[in-house]
Image (cartoon, rainbow, N blue to C red; front, top):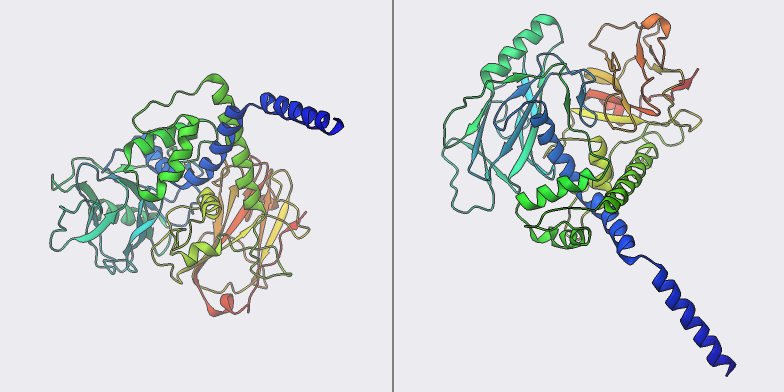
Length: 459
């Protein structure tokens, strides 16, 4: 009898517990969180397109920088040592042609055509399919078997209808005359148009110092974007499970997405938590470049290399790693060459986060092992992009700067001007910041540990 009463009591408690839980609410938040990590790369890719449209760019219109970017170029970790060409495209209604100029004695092109998931399709330029000779790239729907690539066109089969390209113009320097010639190189050599039209009627637009942002939406509008994407793009086999999860939060093909006020509040909370997780991953990178000797880290997960920049192999999709990568990264290449190397710093020598309200000094050792140049740029942890309002945003060895007698370079960081403004980079509009040190043409000393970046010093 006593045993029966105990079981009855347990059953009553269990029933009460089940009744007290809001299963619909818990399912919404659980599925939304995982869907956000799964869909981060494609929404971020879509933001590359939407950012251009918001800035006034049209599909098949060339957008370019007549000078290197300022802080207003709000994309994940861009650099300011070269001008950019930005293109956005859509092949749902037919193939698109992008004409790329050949390399010259002064200028060359480096970049990649990406699909909407930011999977690299085809590289361009000296290391790309045109081998520096320039040419006409034929962008088309890879699943349309009726399309035939015309003779003398370079094929770009796309696995999504939409995509983007972020191309860098490599210049010998950033002098005024060089940049004017670079602009002419862009205007004469780059063209984009529907193949059926044969030419473009859209004039290229200069976006230097214009607001051009593709930053990620960290609220419920993320799911609005995801709803638009899955209703526009083709559903592929690999996406069906995730899209099934999305139906739990009201996102389905062919149906409107109309979350209630309470659901919007829940989705805002979910995206704030996802944002926190990705920032946590950013500031706690696990791959040191010089283990035990310096806080500088490798900024991408090894799965990026092993999967050919796609984050997919024969057994799985690297969902978490992919989401983190595209929080701080854009436009991965098909072939990861040896032309550049990147290192990231998020903490000082005491393993404390780099604080936007504190002062720091970084001493770059002499004889940086590069055949071209080096640069260091400052980014906001909260956005993965330039600190808003910061000027300047970085320092490169090709720019005017002061070098110490022993060949070292002291660079200062802080909310207020330091060192009389010499070799100074502002951080005041960021709660936490991080640095990217770029090596252009890294030499053997970088690879064989014959040279090392020291920790940043908090002043």
